[in-house]
Length: 229
Image (cartoon, rainbow, N blue to C red; front, top):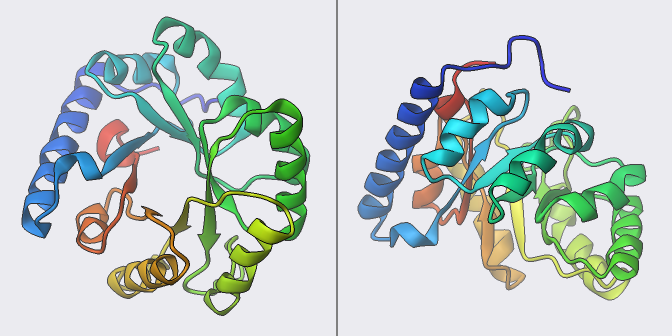
């Protein structure tokens, strides 16, 4: 469920959204990229409908959530009111939540282990629903973070295809907070390129402009839009 402090001021959220859009446009221009090549995922985790609705009204349609249960609780009425909304799961996914995730989300950014691959494969086949899938790469090899180690990425992606029949469309990474993000974005892009993957989920509020320079196709921006959690 959402936190008790999760409501945000509507006009502030809208201005945050518009400023992020301006920054994306500047970053794309600086990188020689078309604005349409980068999809903004507005990370609405912990924020309630009162905070989210003004951003929807301002034109945003793609949102990110960390937890299946929170998304399940708050998004169905919002999606009923605005049918073209897309939901992305950007947090870790437990295998026992795979069925709900496949039914609720249009994209899952955190595919990272065999048990989850098996669960997702089963649910995708039985439900005939095919969310966009990203494999999460733990570029900093941080023990507290989910994700596949970079040196294991090629074998993991091959197993996704050959053993589990999953179509992985891209990679996701979260660089270590205390390190410069650019080398982590470059590493993720290199792994994607050699595996023929076109999509890169890279960059958050503090570093999405850098991520765009390194080819990010999806950026995950929360606090710059909604404010501090």
